[in-house]
Image (cartoon, rainbow, N blue to C red; front, side, top):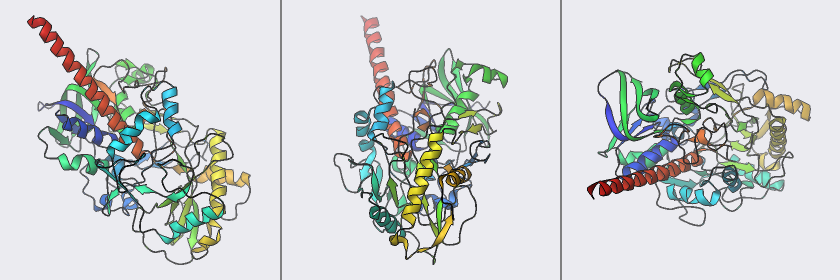
Amino acid sequence: MANNTIASDYIIIGAGSSGSVIARRLLDAGYSVHVLEAGSADTDPNIHSPQGWPALLTGANDWAVMTTPQKHANNRVLYWPRGKVLGGSSSLNGMIYIRGHRNDYDVWAANGAAGWSWDEVLPLFKRSEDHADGANEFHGEGGPLHVERIINRHPTAQAFVDAAKALGHAETEDFNGSRMTGVGFNHTTTRAGKRASAWQSFMAPLLDHPGLTVTTGALVTRIVVASGRAIAVEYQSADGEHRAAANSEVVLSAGAIGSPQILLLSGIGPKNELQRLGIASVADLPGVGENLHDHLLAGNIYEASQPLAAGKHNLLESQLYAHSKQTDEEAPDLQPLFLHLPYPTDGGAAPAHGYTIAPGIVRPRSRGSLRLASADPTVAPVVDPNILADEYDVEALVDAVEICREIGQQDAFAPFRKSEFSPSGVANRDTLREFVRQVAGTYHHQVGTCKMGIDDLSVVDPELRVHGIAGLRVADASIIPSVPSGNTNAPAIMIGEKAADLILSAATHNSASDETILAATAN
């Protein structure tokens, strides 16, 4: 182990959507922060172009997670893009700003996550935000994260909205407003024609801050726990092994894949599983790596009659929120997404020119797990989301396919449509069930592997403190008990805001306690 230990008040593992927010708020409060990021600086031009995200997939800034063969999805191995770069997946994603339905958060609170109801988290969403429309009941102004509307609308994205409206779907001006259900154009995390990642939004303006240390290319190997408290982090970089010390807390924000992997490597997780790999148990937490789930997306692809114009926004301009025939809940469970390019969700064939009406489900019931394959931190974990294990997920996704195919046949698409490419000719629910098992893939919204709660499988409490370990919190999408009904970047940023408040509150309390003790001693 190298002797050049760096000590800071706080160590944040992961510079993604949550970690960037936490680092900013702690620096603003006057604390020193050391950010450890396994990836590199966000210098690839495709990161900053709203149209560049397809070129990032499987590249140097992508962890390119591969799942186990999925037994309910024709034994296919799924590819999951995950950001390995400053900004994390907010530097790789489609830039859609969606918070989810208010009921999502009220359910968290009702199940034991005190402080996380919709009315309690809405001010945190608004605090982050600098919305192009200004402040109102649902949006904030003046925050670090710029959010804007789709202005230069692609003609096929407009056709999607028109086609859905022709079928009776109401138009929704703002999916983050008073009504989520309906069809409309997305709001995006962009500013002046560039991606507004969490890192660029929250941290780039503070890179010269004297209290900030940023280490890229830092692969965390374990969190060091002494006498029940997290005190340091060990990591590997190109020049060897290092240790970073935390005077106050270690905050783990490495995402739904990275955070459980690091906990397990640190001896925090199912004791028997760790002992099998020769890892000494520090805290026996059986829920680490459990509860893995993800929104699912399929591909209803059309071949275009001619090459389509290039888009001026994020290639994902419009979408629909609807209810499947499988639910009677208030929150919609379907989120079909329109892309003005062919996007095969199974990595299969696609026409040279086309567009995709992508059926998506956002309230999945299937749950999977993450396990270590090895005690070697450079070996990828075993990731099994167990997709489509619950029949509800299959039937809801088939409902979404049927809705998308109906939209795709409307007159609004006549100027662009040559023929349906996938699922061409498929007409009944039995064949559509087989279709979704063959093409279902990720909606890029993995969550849940360090679940927040008070039950036996929870990993962190509602203040994001890891059960049984002092000075250690997890703050990212891995703490989500059940995935919100929408894209997870905005919720992950909100989690960062909430974590910062919890950390600063604890620091103030500890400082006050210290002053009380000093005063008593002086007397």
